[in-house]
Length: 202
Image (cartoon, rainbow, N blue to C red; front, side, top):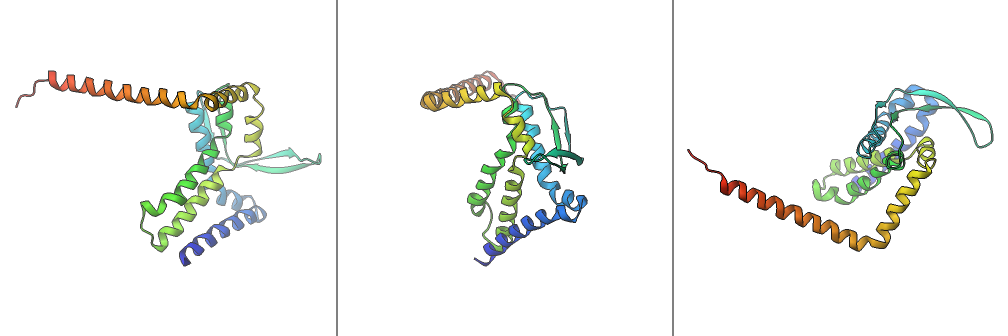
């Protein structure tokens, strides 16, 4: 119980330090945000790669920009990382929301860590720290949300996918099981024919 409390206290300390780091200056804000920024941008890059977004650059070089607030004023904000990709019907929405994939990873760490590692004190603290790292990396930025919901075509495509899965999920699962079964039987048959027709000599 003590180590659980220490791990939780460590997470709260990191949250407080990260919030106050911006007040200490851009250097400390960038320093404490670097690990989560790296994971955040890697998620964008990988999902863009697999959805034909053709990512062409990943930058962790911080830059300042001026944005308009809800009250009509302006404020200076720091952009801690960027990924350049080609928007498309299959790439825009998942690429923009890619960091949300860290949420199930964080949940997996909390639920399965005791099964993977001994339940000793340092391992429990490491569990909380790793879960915090994933959770902090999963938060979409305002720019992420703006990109995700600005492409109507991409929204429509994935809305159709979700609707099809909702109404036909049983048929889709059966088709997936059949394809897996077909792949396994075909590959097994090919391997058995290969080894049966091969002649091995000393």
